[in-house]
Amino acid sequence: MSIANRIRVEHVAVLSDDWYLLKKTTFSFLRSDGSWQRQSRETYDRGNGATILLYEPERRTVILVRQLRYPAFVNGHDDLLIEAPAGLLDEAAPEVRIRAEVEEETGIRVREVRQIFDAFMSPGSVTERLHFFVGAYHGSDRVSQGGGNEEEGEDIAVLEVGIEEALAMIESGAIRDGKTIMLLQYAALHLFNTR
Image 1 (cartoon, rainbow, N blue to C red):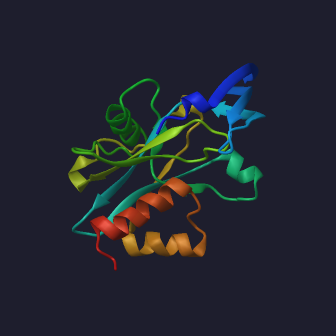
Image 2 (cartoon, rainbow, N blue to C red):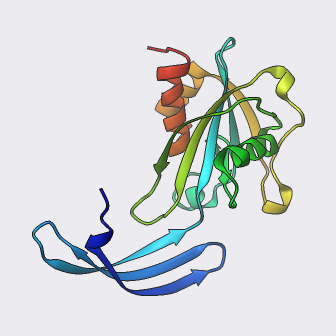
């Protein structure tokens, strides 16, 4: 159902165009009761992205990465963040980009990937739509040590953990990244039958 006829954009101001684009938009919204209400919102546009959970069905393992996420640090997470490999699309197709990103971060050249869904991760302020993938891996798929792109400030450690351990890490608070929690729960329900 389109809501385009319920929104009238009145003014857009660019607040920052440094790392990504931050805008403040004033608009009118046609409410359910038929009245127009003036509102303003800030939106942070960092582009769309993709994430993947690599899994090894026979050994019941998954590949995760650990890296610095400064916004998590300044919000009280005094550790490196454990998460599924992910990256921005940079105008590439989601499947093309996730293949390159996972190899850069983990050193694994994944053979087949499957998109399982997409989601807005923080729709109250961030425009990003994240494409979620899963892909099976085997030991012979490793082509490098991974570690990320040093020029982008990445210093990534690769973790291989059992699915049960990964799920326990959610409960203990060791894994706090939303996209990773979603992927691990998907894996528990659909890839590993942990019920």
